[in-house]
Image (cartoon, rainbow, N blue to C red; front, side, top):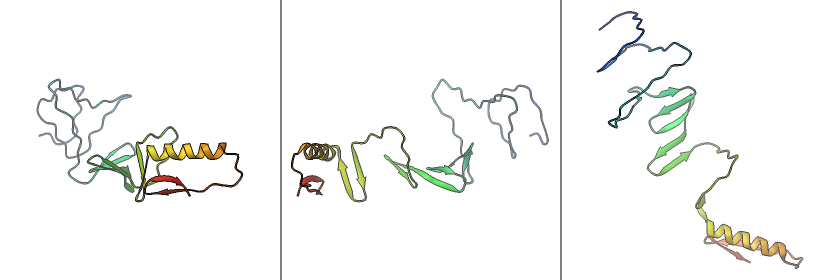
Length: 139
């Protein structure tokens, strides 16, 4: 065990490096690298509360930022967003649930077909559409 400041230009550590304080890397570029051709992995964890990487905070299965730690929550086969989601590109989904109503691709196709029919209709009276039990129908 070494107490106090130690400056090392290069070192190979084969078992464990422990520190009760900060570990600071200096230089224009710094890398923390895990190299294991036998598989394995690299774990960064906190036995206290959270891990901050730049401005992103990881707390258990929550991803957020300082002050709002649960913007995204991960669970088995589910991702929960607790805030607004802005999409600037395409959003692809096989179904969309709004509240208790699920809109499937088939319902959307039927809606588009009905809208196309209404737009091509020479009848000047507005037609009525309703969605009932996930089925789009004319009134």
